[in-house]
Image 1 (spheres, rainbow, N blue to C red):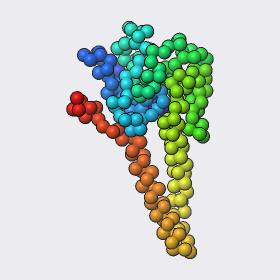
Image 2 (image 1 turned 120 degrees about the horizontal axis):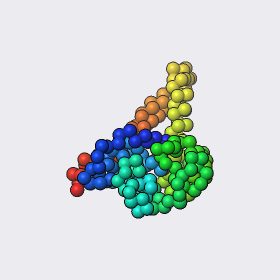
Image 3 (image 1 turned 120 degrees about the vertical axis):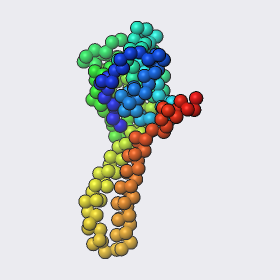
Amino acid sequence: MKWPRVTKTTKPGTLPAGGYRAWKRILAREGQFRCIYCAIHEAAFGGYWNFHVEHYKPKSRFRDLKDAFENLFYACAVCNVFKSNDWPGECRPDLSTCAYANPIDHDFNTLFTLLDDGSVRGETKTSEYMVLRLNLNRPQLIMERRIHLLRHRRAMCERALKSVEHELENVPDRDIQRALAELVKVISKLTGLESDLQQTRPYSEDQTKAAN
């Protein structure tokens, strides 16, 4: 699971009539349809309805930033609820305090280390605080990361099998030969389908409007 890099290059020109919520579509695309904090994709968490417009600096504390596009991000409902209006203070450049790193200024992929058991470890005081406060090691996220790691290992096995695929004809036992050949095909197809599934949004924003 990779955290999205956000550059805010698609900043709208004017505030929409509906306020900050009207920018949700733009924020979703900007964040590659992933939660800015835990990196979970819409496909694994119920889609557009289960994601919120997140205020990096809480709107209850920074009212002048309520509709400021640079303060808005796409986040899953769980991370958004855990963060709530928590704001321990401004984030220092060296990330040495309990705070929230600004997704514009920092690549979250460098702030966290993915461990073999599927958990993440904060590499700075700031990212340690984020792991604890946002509960970034909650069970679903750990399972998603473990699956991601296993998919990576399976891809390595697939490449190894394909590299010797032409030699399968020389396997003396025909049953083993057929089984190995079929395994190569199944793994290849399954990998392709799972890759598509990871990026397939459950429904579009237009469909959510139609349902209302």
